[in-house]
Image (cartoon, rainbow, N blue to C red; front, top):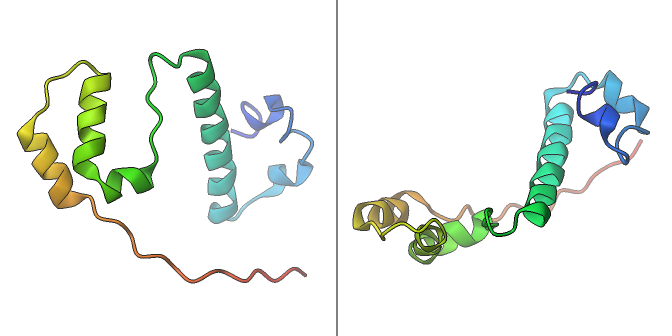
Length: 103
């Protein structure tokens, strides 16, 4: 990933320490950044084909968001899908703020 994606990213390629990451958490953050940047880039290129949504909105109001997804995809609303979403998707309780310590 570092050679194929980070090395080609104008903002990340200058951060040489990324090449030395061994901690899975640190590596997952870099993967998340790369994925989000790519996703946002694709939304700009193909706005008519990609429906951005926030996970927080989906879990806060699954019926509304699933209906919007169905409309966007030109699908009929499916009561089973909507009921399943309402049953499964629940907001995650907020966590306390993390106070980072710099060394």
